[in-house]
Image (cartoon, rainbow, N blue to C red; front, side, top):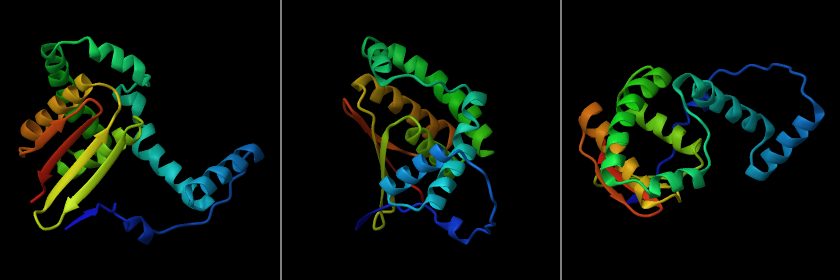
Length: 187
């Protein structure tokens, strides 16, 4: 049996408090439109925005992330050799796993990595699908990046490094021109 992984909803049990802020009317109207388009209420959207800010955006400049267009990444990676990609991925994986994840999550373990990874993919405009096979206890992530096969290879090398060297876990990874799939057992 397979089902789509549902994120932790413990936030529903969190203590809340009412606070009043004053916002520019145009900003509130834009937030209301965005909330409507997402099918959520304004309060939920605002909490999502704050959560995303505190879990990701506040750290971006501190750990060295930069915004770059996909066509630029595609152009650079398309012309690289597998050896060049492997060298860059090895260095990047070490820096990301040892610096970014630890700095942003306060620890390096499977749950911290997966939380960081999902945040990173979401903030990189990549689509991520996460399913869990309850019978075999296997997690499957599909990352649709729409860049190039060499980008998939780069992500594969990073995932192998993190899973094997940092997490001490087995991972099965497959790549295509536009996506990367990885599977692992959490048990």
